[in-house]
Length: 465
Image (cartoon, rainbow, N blue to C red):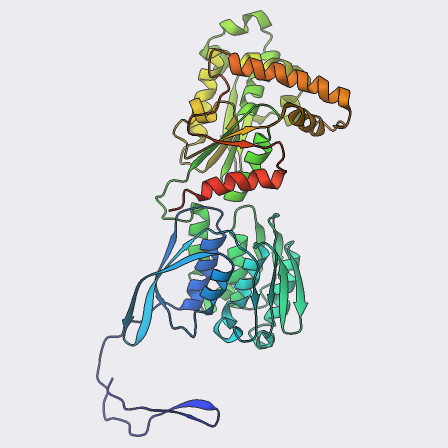
């Protein structure tokens, strides 16, 4: 603008002086980059998403005195890249590409605090989902921000179910993967509201922000943008299709419980195909038709029994008419005794094939069963086939029913029943149990539940370029 300035260091401070004011200013165009501290929330969102394509944050100011969070994220194992960097009007700016990442805990010390001071509430949020204990020291300045941010961060993390400890000059946060739920008190602090807004938008979280409007102090459109990304779930553009994941395997291999948790972690719907077959078996048992006539029933007659599937907020509900069928009825011994035979009937599979494929409309589905990857969703984005030792599967079945898995006789009896079911499933003429040629085989015999879930999530993350 044509104004001469004098810059110098004096008295322990950097000073800028205007001595001779010009008579008029020269008009010019300035290209102002996006604020890094605002972009930091999208970096956190992009990293914490369980899966998805890279999120691109455009035209972000990259002044090295403001980008300390990038070094912290790198230590935590986050995949973040700078693209299209350029200097314009004396400022470096560029696009930030961020991928979903598995995070490791880190430490931030006093020497690093000045370059990351505004992002430290986000570091706490990231630490709550990282592996290990994240520690921040030398950040006593946080005590005198819009709120006491050390206390606000710790109190709110505890309130939603995370482990955190207040330090005189910082905090410690223990990471975890469990569901988070509770009320967040922003204390009239925009950065507390936005940091916990990111955490609350993750699949499976149920956080209530007491005053989201306070974000307007620095980012009026923040929660509107966050809600758009949350609804999309996959974290890309609104038009991107979310993947379909299938998990097949024999009884007791762990597919249903794993599929349910994978769906929760991804924010996808869960389809338990076995529940549909059990529902139709249950309806047949109540129909009054003789068992000997079931194999002659037409698809139209079976559809007349009113079994339906309805997408719910987190799964696919099984109904008869408009009423949900109780899970206890679906899992009854009588239904269990007949479901394998019913599943082999061509008319049954024809009716349920349509219901299952309808459930996958728009993607964002984790389906488990015995022919999900081979017949129902042959074009699924990720196919998994679970196996496990016969006796281990028998012990799991006993645990599900509340029985003692240490009873050797009970284990052998259950193993015999599962062996018979395996044979029937593998040798039926229509849609026999088998792994798809492109399925990832996972032996769950020695894996605990968390390891099974992580094994599948790792495969989904590979979809990310």
